[in-house]
Image (cartoon, rainbow, N blue to C red; front, side, top):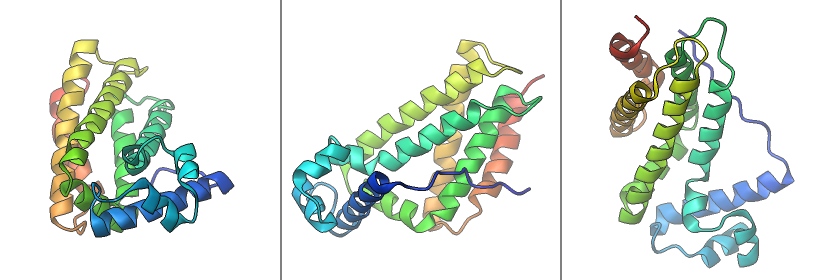
Length: 200
């Protein structure tokens, strides 16, 4: 089964400046740790002013998690366009597997970000909040799917279980230094998951 990475539009000038800030921030976070890296140092490394940094990001945390929230936006777009005959769960499955392909394509950056998170208690706590946002979006997608939509209570339970599954798969992938087949493992995990939450 071939899963294509979700498509991300090419960057414009503003996006290129933003990307330069993100690259500088991640490199500094990896070298010095998130907590010890200042906004001033990030701006200096990217060749912009402190004021310019805050035109793009309100905080260091917002910069660090901007990729996650961008991928969340891609997820919203994917689930908003179900394929003919797809159940709500199948639509979510397709979107999650497309994003797993993105993780695989961006392996080195994802591994680096994971190491930065593990080195900061502050980021570990913030990461849980990001996961909560994903869980809420998944639950909403399962509720509003045109075919096989779930009742709100069932969708909430399924979304929580899905996030547990996703976290377990990512943990396994990170421990293997990204050498595992994340998409393939996702396909296997969704097959198990669908036995309990798929359409009768």
